[in-house]
Length: 263
Image (cartoon, rainbow, N blue to C red; front, side):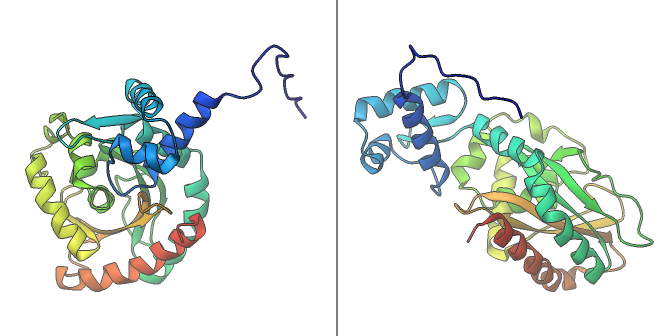
């Protein structure tokens, strides 16, 4: 076993600044939306000046975003990348693979697990049903989140301010002509419908002749941890059956939430 390096005798016994920064980052990750610096200072019992210094450092490194009009701070892009990095290191993959296999066996269609990474989704697990065609959503593939059922399902769990921050650059919308959503306003309207329904759908925006129904799995703070998606030929399952299908997928999503400790 590799021995742990000896601590420098001349070093300080602790790193309070780093510890406080981690407390602030953890606190922000558990909120449902951006919060004022004064609230962070109060809830963590930190001096207000120190809180602003910490938030400034987090903002400089992309872990926090300042919303000047609202005078609030939220998580930044780097925090999302950190979360995605955790997912890519296999915990979500290992926990979701048997759930996905069971779902495919029961429902008889191909399925996959995806996570958010910035404005994209990354596919972590794919399970193909018997006699079904190969999908574009192979493990490791990235696709624009706004053009996929998986992405929309997960984006719908985020506060609108967070979605706006993610899509501040309009470049993600300059995509293929068959993508139905081509602007932030169009995405915002779509996410309202997804939140109301509790699931997202996509029809022929990724693959001609194929449709998908997705339900997001949330972590302990309510953020999107992953998404379970069933993909099938359009002629096999009519749109009128998609709500019931989403209900069946939700059963497996809840099991994944239980396994990752969201409860």
